[in-house]
Image 1 (cartoon, one colour):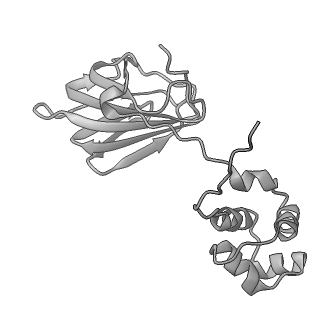
Image 2: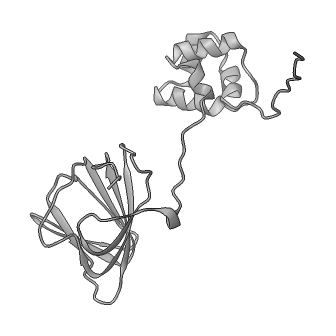
Image 3: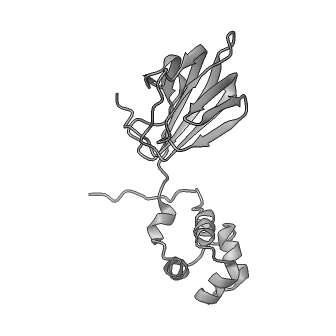
Length: 195
């Protein structure tokens, strides 16, 4: 069996931003990291800007000090694109609204829903709750009124309203001649999106 020639990728491995992010998440300054690793501040700064490549031993030292698995610096982040045209229609129980799930189906940490709410469209006459810690309503165009037990809040284009999903509420597009375009963000996702 003949050996195949192996060529390395010409793409430079860029780990500096991930090291900087890890350091900042831990509220470490470059000075503190330099003191803990025995490296100079300038060298750490150059590594974080991808101006130099550390040796394996230096990389292991940096990762040990920050309790960071070395392999995590080379992992490809998971991304999933949901095209607006392909976003599935869902029905959250309201009327007069076309709702599309823009976060991936099965995403448990967050749900992102874009809705077009016709004039008079609503979440229904009865207040409801969602099994989510946080609900955010961002109005892109038009307006939506959100009713709570103790009052109503009008959210207009450009505004965002944040509240606990477990708070009884409902909503309506109060403008008789104008649809509203809105985005709902639910954290964590109250359902799997597979309905």
